[in-house]
Length: 204
Image (cartoon, rainbow, N blue to C red; front, side, top):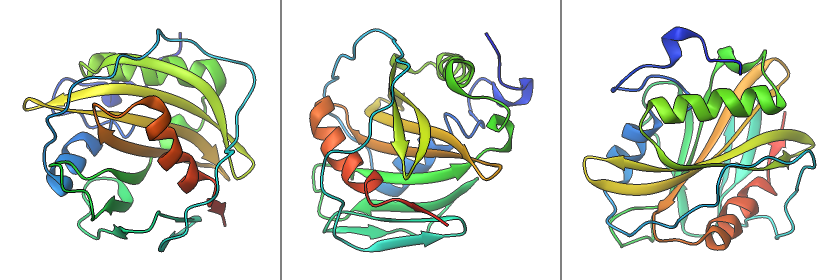
């Protein structure tokens, strides 16, 4: 199993872009959630890759150097970025204590990894960060580029939320696209939102 470089796998506070200071960023930007957990299946991977079969989101377009994407109606861009995050958008209509959101970070250390090696490295980093219910889902195609798809349950200061991360390298840049949702949302509910955003994705 290939490992992340040693400086990427640390005890709290986690600095790796894979498990990101995204955990703190998401909670700071959106508030804590208190839903129950949605048990994931055991870790598995597939040699085939899925692509979105839902309609692209039709809200605001978020643009960054290297890519753009559209968020659902009611979502908006947040400019309070921290760490390596380059975009953050959240559901401003969500009133249940945790606003669903998507953020993108870059990580140059993942550019030499792909497929199972990348999935193993991400899983290891999540385990080191005490993330639970980790699952490697089917690879996913984001605007023609295959991403490793992982999911896990974060518990930060007693607040649980679930993340789905799509990790890939495009034109020499490593990207981690992280969707965060209330822990009680089902996999299909999360996929409907996440895939609508990914269906709108465009690499520059």
